Image 1 (cartoon, rainbow, N blue to C red):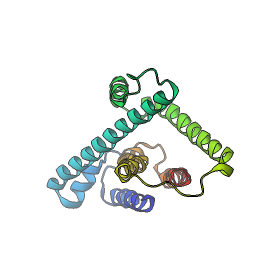
Image 2: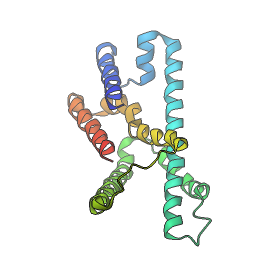
Image 3: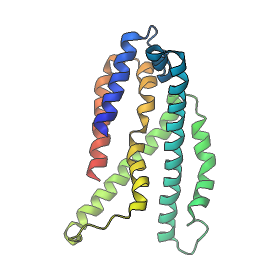
Image 4: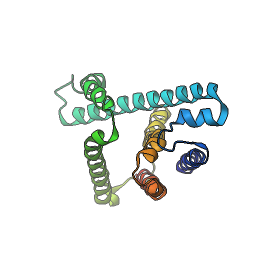
Amino acid sequence: LCIITSFNCWAVIRWKKRYARDNRAVTYADVGELAYGPKFRTFVTACVCTTQLCVCTVFFSFMGDNISSVIRSVAPDMPFLGDSRAIMTVLLPIVLLLSCVPNLRLLSPATIVGMVLLVTGFGCIGGIIGINWDTRPDELPTTDWKHVPLAMCAVMYSFEAINLVIPIEAAMQEPDRFGGIFVLAMTTVTTIYGAF
């Protein structure tokens, strides 16, 4: 998944650099129109919107499921907060406010907090695995196939930011450094999700 995603991102950026007149104001829809004409612009816009809507919807339900399962294990006497729908209702205003932030610079504090929490969570998981390594079961757990689509969506969510590749590259003060930053980001995401 990482290789396919990375290749597609590189291809779009290369195409944009080769054919776009104004390097600063190019979107996926602009690249689609340059490649295949005005009708394709609408198709690309619909695809990007659908992808974002689907990924964000799955992630929103994923947040509700995870937080409610933690609350059920920590405070079983609070059944209302153990319901994922209640958690999603509480989170909805926060998520809507974050989606209204107009630019990446204003969103960066929330992104930094999210990254710190994510790395801390992975560190805790790694520590727990390390502590319990000797007592792990000999047999792998059976797969409940009804949860596989949600698990795959969680993995795909980690690569969801591919829709931001063109805007981030265009907004960089030094776009020539994009290649190294992109490789570092994709390698980090792949390593973290591959390890856990």
